[in-house]
Length: 555
Image (cartoon, rainbow, N blue to C red; front, side, top):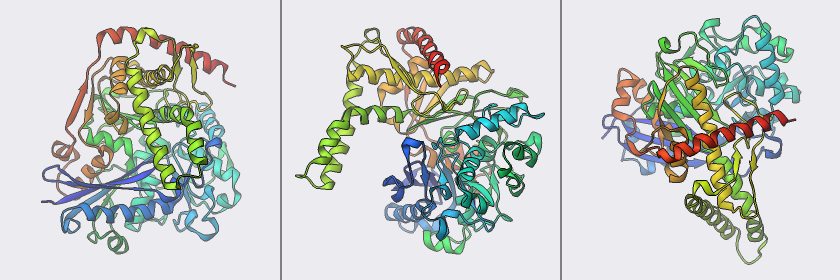
């Protein structure tokens, strides 16, 4: 068997490694490692929308997940690896010093959350994002034109500015900020020093305001006009960016030893998880790939001729080469999807969990297992009950902005809402409304694309929810009025990374060639129910009315 490629997928809670036979496309083995500090809730304050991850979580987990892979992989597979590529969540930047060292890896910053990676769902930089948006829209050049014309608190510059405003010690030593998907390939290839650092096209184009039309990043004067604290940071970033079908460099001897991989193994430019997941889903013009997990990320592509000079407002950017070479990648998404369901699960289980935790008759491990079983069974039971409720027999309507709104038209001030509650309303009624709300939120994204002449004929769904819930998937098909395909692969994002790794390793001349062999086959297709489509067409208008009311009355 072999040769093999490795895809590393860094999610919010864990990293997954996938070993793929590049000749057959077979997913040979996989391993998963949870981040140790993150799993304990360290450095996070959810009540303040602060979510930080320590770089040691990524470094230690990289070593553990690759070494765990060899425990389940074919014998001596590690000697026959031709390439490795990485995807991460994003925007997830970190401050580095003048030598390229992440600040949290220095003794004086080891326990400082501001010196750590600012996770994608950290929303502490809302005011900074609004300031950047105002400056961009009033400038002679709108540097947000290709990022939806609204800057988000989830993105690079807002996060960097917020941290530096609130922590002088970090501001004094922050030579530049680096996205996770650029930082880890640089670590593995020994190119972290600012003079050697190279950036992938994906993060730079979608979150950092890079675009070919203005020769790279906006000028330093623009950032100084936002806040002098940003002075000079952009000048330290390389203006050239690279697509993920190219190699950053080769694995260092140190990391080759730590990972039991060949020396000089090519390491690809990193990208965000949703972008590489779309590659595993055979993304093409007219098809929307939706990564459905705690939040969602929506990816489609179109030819430069299709989009021409059209700039789609309110999305997360359009960048040529950010997904696959020679095609414009367009990104959107929802700030909460599965997180909305998980919130409701925690809400209704809170008393039971409190009782379990206060018991002196069971061990801590038994408590953990009991709570896990309770949570798992709750969602299963809610889904089964909700599926049996006739659509016409519920008055409950919900709005999905429980973590703000990412797209269309980013607004982290807005919140979720539930209306139509009565004495006869059950937990299953509310849960069904939450499912419908997340589907309505996704429909608004599809409409934003199609209203701008970006065709969306069908949807490919990847991620955990696409595998776990027929209720969610069928509801989405009915509300979107489009067929939805789910994939056989359980690790679509890691598989997309492996496809790029196969290309940079020389197994294929192009990403398209690699996709024909390695992309995931379809496992199931959900087809819209005409009666449900008609019902939800009316309900969607009520959703939009509720959304407008909530947004108009948000303080």
